[in-house]
Image (cartoon, rainbow, N blue to C red; front, side, top):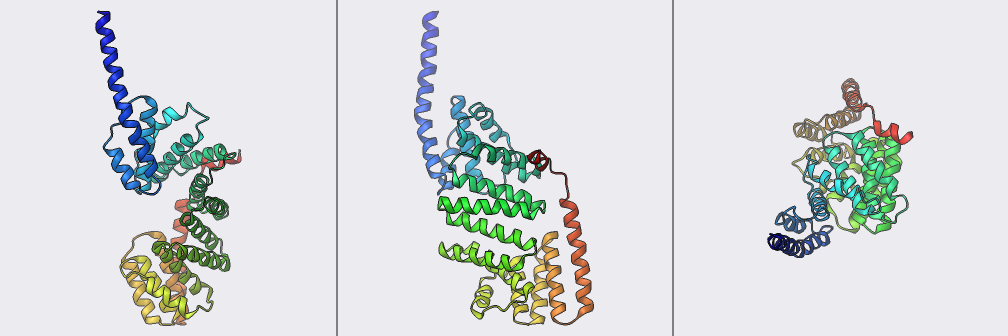
Length: 339
């Protein structure tokens, strides 16, 4: 009987050992590919099974969650990341894995609309990262905290965290993330009504986007610069105006909005009205509608049609008030942070 038990245990240990010898290198391979090639990392993980000891299962769960996040898949089920946390929470000295787990868990909470829950997790990570030199991960964290405050229309706090994110990304040498954080700073500045500073920041973001030839971030920078030049009534160079016009895609609300702004900057009122209607037809989002209504005001004001301009202002105020009411919710995370 004892002999059978020993043989059985030996078999279990043998196959477990084979599993670890095969699984561990594959997990390590996926981890190395994660930053620059998340597609390949996810492909490796999909071929593996969440088996092995608790450490291997937690590592698999965290890597899989990270791959889904980097692939921009809108995951709302937190069961996988919870599995990782059930293991890593017992290892406070393993800051990297603890913080990454809490970060991806917070991202899921944001997607499900639990902003206070996400903020609590992000602020918890901030405390853990205070005395570390993980500049890239600090940048990711600060950008997420800034995003929560931004959605709650607390633009001064949002700007603070976006600024911290930019500094950390700059320190890490990640120009693309630095560009995104600069764009975030510009957006928060615009909503704080500092138009001149917002123009400077969007211009800085454009320079960075040009540096690493990122067409998406170039387009975002140019689109926002167009709107800011309309609002500020500042003179715009022909070169910049032409570049903005060429960047506008004629199949999205943002592309048509940009062409509306370009037409206004050229003082082509009829064209501005035409593109504005196309922009409206491509969205049902209340935030987009509010911005378009504000642009409609500028069109009619520039055309000296003040009755219509006044009507558009009233509609803009109504939509903006609706947005503010929907965002005015109690933030447990903020209260906890102040406490």
